[in-house]
Length: 116
Image (cartoon, rainbow, N blue to C red; front, side, top):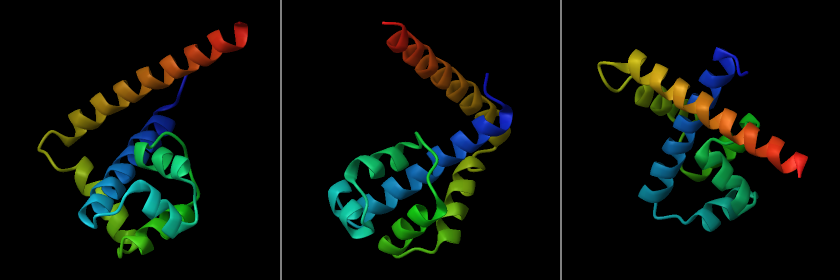
């Protein structure tokens, strides 16, 4: 079972990923181009944009530089996204439940694969 902290971090990673996607698109960059600018694989960038895994801050910093943004802007926009509507706490709780279910589904799928 995942802790509330782990789920909150997963939600924040997804919000950061959404900011990166939005800014990448605004700058007219493809995933391949942004990945090349940052010296990372396209697959890694896709993972970051989708918030599927935890990456080091230097990866996020590379992307913020490539997008002509400060890291504080990226984090600020992600936090703003979480607080954007009046029911932000309720929205966060829904996202936490959704993320918990998605994580449990992935874990179940991994267990089934291992048992085969």
